[in-house]
Image 1 (cartoon, rainbow, N blue to C red):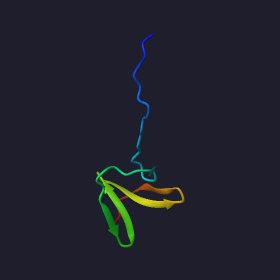
Image 2: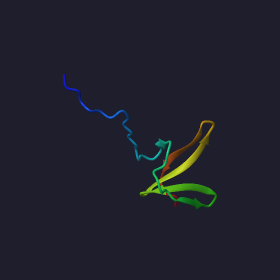
Image 3: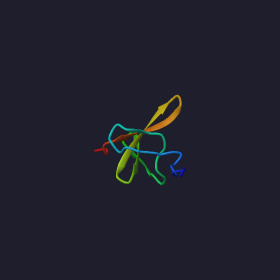
Image 4: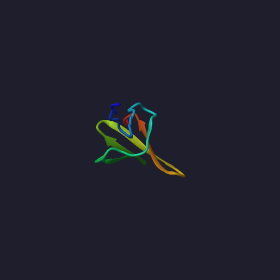
Length: 64
């Protein structure tokens, strides 16, 4: 019986506003607008949110 090669882990990252990610892509610069911190990566804007389990990042619209 032939075995197929399948990845152990598949990561699908949505770029929809409101989606939550647990890590940012590499080389995401920090941007502060007013008193709000964002990270901008490849024209996708992330806003950190702090939870008891650590930091997650919500995809948001670009700050205006």
